[in-house]
Image (cartoon, rainbow, N blue to C red; front, side, top):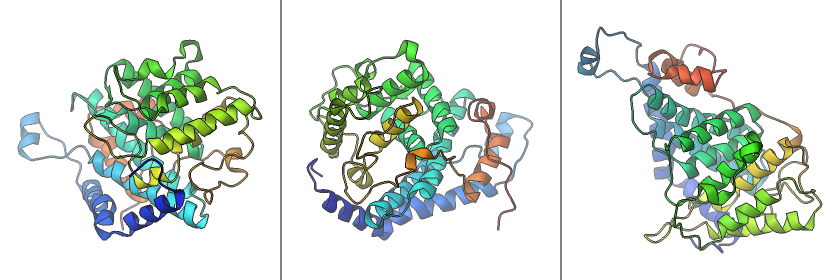
Amino acid sequence: MPGNTSPDKALAKLQQWLAHPGNRATLLERPERALTEYAALPVRRFSNAHTEKAAGYIRSPSTVCMDSMGYWLQAEAIHAWAAQGTDPAPAWCRAAAWRLWGMAVQCARLEGGEIREPHIQSDKAAEVLYLLAAVGDRLRCAQWGQRMLALRAAGHLQDAGSKSGPFALSLLTHWLTPAQAQPVSAFCMPYMVDTSGACAAYQGLIDHLHADSGSPALGTALQAAAEAHQQETRVTTDEETFDFDAFHDMVVAMELLGWLRIRSWLGHAPPPGWPAPPLHAASALSANWWAHERQTEADPLLVRVMHRVQQVLPGREMLAREFAPLPPDPSPAP
């Protein structure tokens, strides 16, 4: 889809995409069944690894399914918000929980020696960060932010020419490690092509992170970032990758909402006219959105999945160490 697609057209395409039964089956219903089956598997102990392997014992849930569940919930909430003004916070909190714990499980598998690479792309990691920040879960945002920086330092945060990923990492250094703050360019892939101008626009937001909320330069920087987001809503080609090719990304710029929240945590008010996202006029947030911090909410299925993870997954100690408190023990499955 071209980067200049009108907001109304983007919203209509998102509605059409959500209404397609194949998309719902692939991204919501099948993952839900797979994760329900995982949560119901017994917890067993084996005398040695060979016996366990022969039994086909499953330790890890499908993190692809976990991310898919969150992805679908996030897209549904964006549509309901932009089309009808429905408060996205409840669904976004659930979506953030699914996506966060899916990536955290990948990190635990890495620490436990089950995998050698966590297969986490920087732009996808950034999406989780922006979602956590947008809803106001400061604890989880900081926990995931620290893990992103650690993954990057260890060479485990993969990148295929992302622009929003480097923006997230630069933003994290300014928030969590200001003495070692780095520009967006420090995290960009060498020789990356950036025809949209997103990296320069994101650097403008970093430069104005502490600017006065009424500063005209701040408004200019936000508008430039909004325009760069629109230019990034394209299909990836052999020559260049684009960060935002999902239909819900064409409606709302989540990275700008994340930036605004982290800016608020640094003690700065949103600029006048915000927090309305720049891509669809109907999708204004409530006036008191930034006054409330919310915790991501694990729905009953996610709680059951994570309860089993905490008993069987190699590296599960990392989850307790870096992402505590974990979801509570589940109630009996229906």
